[in-house]
Length: 494
Ligand code: GLU
Image 1 (tube, rainbow, N blue to C red):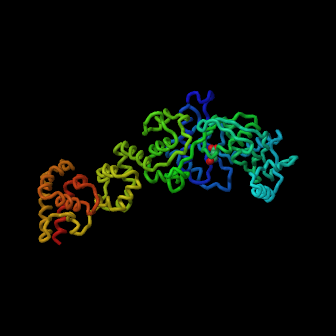
Image 2: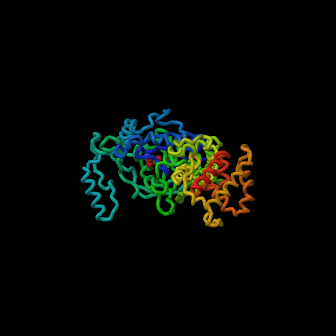
Image 3: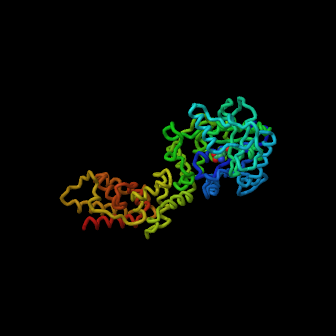
């Protein structure tokens, strides 16, 4: 990698503010960042906002927020300025005009003399003849002077086969069918992406352009423009598509191509997201799967980006997220859990931070992300930590109970009484799950485990599904555990 180029690496991430930033764009941003960092290069953030019709208000702020969340920083950009300012294309219109005039001077740009309906006619005719529509076949013999009211088109300097090397896709080439007189500046005065990104890449001295593979088919156009401007093109790095869960179709909204910030809201840690996205189309030379950003920068090699589509895999993302959750310092784990405990539980008067600290390890064992905590709460799997359980007395009986039907309430009450008396012998400070288990285990074996442990668990939780009674007892503490067992006895007497 060190010899990727003799020049200092200058690269850019150039999103368009046309909507939320999805994970595909985020992966492009990450690889661009890794390439720059790995080579002690420069990363420029450029906002490509010349398609005014598709622009969405607030999208630029959103993009910056996503990048910051995930830990990608840039050396120059609209928020921090830099030697190449401004970094928003709509503020660079004079520059594009200058380049357009240069092309006019070289005889390589001309105003499109046709009306929209005339161009539409040409297109229709080509369709009927089952031929590709090529504007250059209708290029006027002489060029009028451009007054800015008509689109300005590029005149392809030479119809030839272009060959180029892509660092991921290898040696590529395309014949003149890929070349056409594309629009440089539209009649609204704004340049097209095809034109202004090339101008900016030249002006900002970009050495490496990283973007999705959907751009490969347009590269001959860009090469002809570089040629027309007498400038060497940068190194191209196209990234493989991200495929959906089926591995066949491109990643769709349903399987992950959602707003990147939704992952934040669902409780994916930025470190996990970075790790997961880095492995989506790139792999290290060994089997290592967990990487910090620093380790990624060290290990990253463009040559190891794969050509074939990378498959989105929720299970892997969840696994990585769990790995990072496990590694968080205890205090941060507790803050994470507390953030996802719903308001209605926090509003219960028994809610306190102490309980959160106690339940954090058992919650973390059961979840992949914060959304699961919300789900657990919805299923009443957490309520019993924050308030007294509420249940019918018959639920206290184990399904395969051996207790005789005749005086079953008295018998179960006596079991609970005995359980209480055993637990009472444990010192407050020793009331942990191991001691609770050791204290009642032989009694439960003697009577029948289900008839002791189920009622105890139910009395503490009031629900069918919960952690085991020893864990519940430890979390609730001695006093509350005994209180709840006494409540169960009262309920049995009603
Ligand atoms: N503005 C383009 C996009 O968002 C950038 C493509 C490129 O990196 O050149 O897709």
